[in-house]
View 1 (cartoon, rainbow, N blue to C red):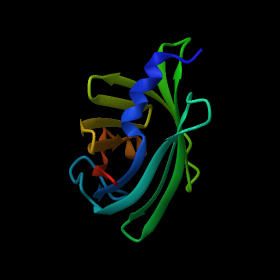
View 2 (cartoon, rainbow, N blue to C red):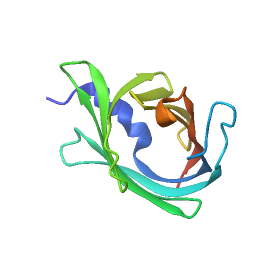
View 3 (cartoon, rainbow, N blue to C red):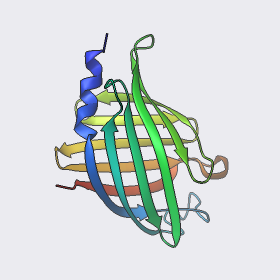
View 4 (cartoon, rainbow, N blue to C red):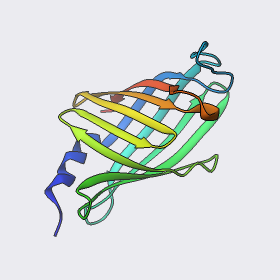
Length: 149
């Protein structure tokens, strides 16, 4: 039987256009915005057959680089928590623990984490952090997604 917690994922379903800033190599605690480049992406979220898992796909340009990937988001009834399996074109493949409180979703694994705020049904704010080379938490990317109608 389908867990009703899955209905919380409906807020993501649809097509989104993201714009913001991506940060990268060269960062350190004293220069957190080193290598800042524009982020632009088109992304989609859709229920897989059965409505137990959401498929998230994206194609992004970060400066002159392409960032393409897929994520599967679901709910683990044995742990009573959401999860996200992430795969990108650089080989990065973490498994995120996902928590939700009201309109704020938190994605976390040992080296990356995000705060995702649902501002309304048409806008989402993403703030990603990472531990670059074992550093303290540094900004990875900040972006705003607007629903494509």
